[in-house]
Image (tube, rainbow, N blue to C red; front, top):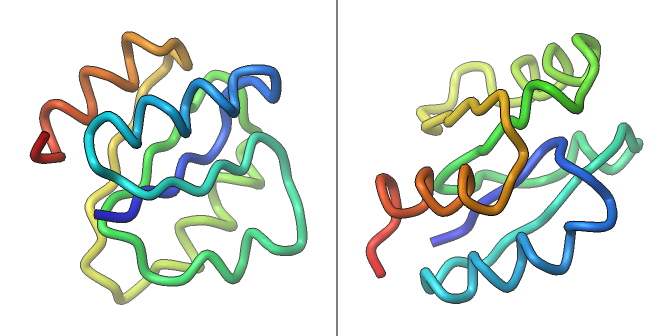
Length: 93
């Protein structure tokens, strides 16, 4: 399963990736706005940490996946435990 994480803290990127590996998921993390945000492909799940990203970034993600049937999990908290809850709900592992 592939997961794209948008937002969160840059210093937590490695922890996000390691936790996704524990759930047998391949993760890409975009903690801040980049041009490459438009080419994240078609993941199985998108996690939006809404407290740490701008509205512009949310709109960019939403317009990129428009028309695709990709589940989106939104969390106000960008903690490891919040990501663990999302992954346990959506991933098998």
